[in-house]
Amino acid sequence: AQKVTQAQTEISVVEKEDVTLDCVYETRDTTYYLFWYKQPPSGELVFLIRRNSFDEQNEISGRYSWNFQKSTSSFNFTITASQVVDSAVYFCALSEEYSGAGSYQLTFGKGTKLSVIP
Amino acid sequence: NAGVTQTPKFRVLKTGQSMTLLCAQDMNHEYMYWYRQDPGMGLRLIHYSVGEGTTAKGEVPDGYNVSRLKKQNFLLGLESAAPSQTSVYFCASSYTFSSPLGNEQFFGPGTRLTVL
Image 1 (cartoon, each protein chain N blue to C red):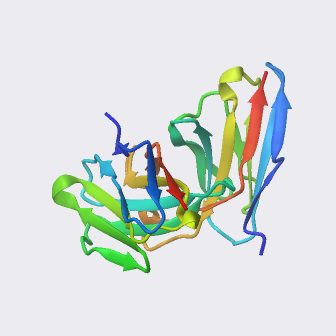
Image 2 (cartoon, chains in turn blue, purple; image 1 turned 90 degrees about the vertical axis):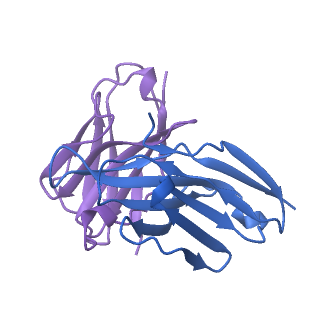
């Protein structure tokens, strides 16, 4: 089973529509972090948000908001009033320890390609 | 600051050839990482380093070697390239957050490698 599942491979929306990108994760650890990264067409990856496993408060940053629910192991990302510049591949990632204390790994989902049509 | 830079940006190899990818960061970060990105697969960690002189295996280390002789540089080597290693390679670095689990990673622009 995948540790990080982004079930939506591709999404297309019309500009100004709201869109939610789903992320479901799997871990046995009680301490872990979740991330969202953006990869625009230019190719580089850009950090968007970090959330630790003890902080279930939702976060809002401008048009972006994140909904973290441990009960459903989900960390969903919503873009409000989407814009063409939001077109990118978005990756959800899970950071957890492995192979004993001191070693950890960031596992990425396969990404969701968002296309915002003008 | 240049951030994280990668050399080269593109490379074509023949099966069996060797090459080294260079990653450099000027942010004085302790941690550095090498990932590969394949279509539909997301990013997968190859190797990482938590400090100068130390390296560790990630999810897909076979066929690759790494070295971190200087804090600012992290080299990824392919001793005998195979077509399965055709991919886009990303280097990243991170500072030491309150917990290494929470390290925000800064990525380089990527190296597109084709092995024929």
